[in-house]
Amino acid sequence: MDTKKDIESRHDIELFVRAFYEKIKQNEQIGFIFNNIVAINWEHHIPVITDFWDTILLDHPVYTKNAMAVHYDLNRIIPLKKEYFETWLTIFNAALDELFEGEIVNLAKTRAASIAAVMEFKMKSL
Image (cartoon, rainbow, N blue to C red; front, side, top):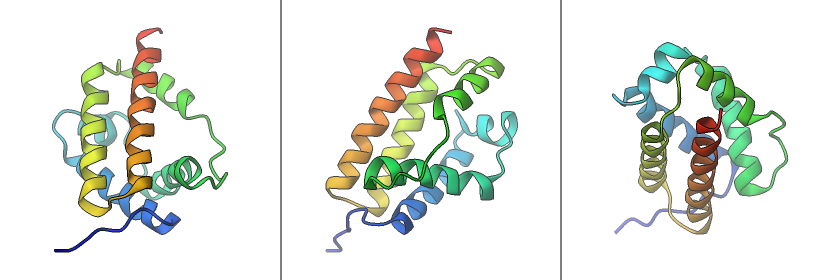
């Protein structure tokens, strides 16, 4: 049986982030947000999101932007519903599980759940 390794490096995070967003882009419920509403420049976005998770998971202080501000702006264009956050989190966890396992993976899942809950709460409050 193949055992998966834990997330150990920025390279691992980037691998996960790319796999995650490939799933997001294809998802019927939220893919349109990324593909049509925002029309993300993926080659710019992937390193930024990799910085975000590198900072959160491996304590490398490379992310310096305000993640909430971007989502507030998006919420003004299309209200971000609870279902969107739930779908995002399900895809996030599935992408992690396909590639890795371990303590940092569990931390990623915990932090992602917290982030989704806080964002969903704050978007409702606008």
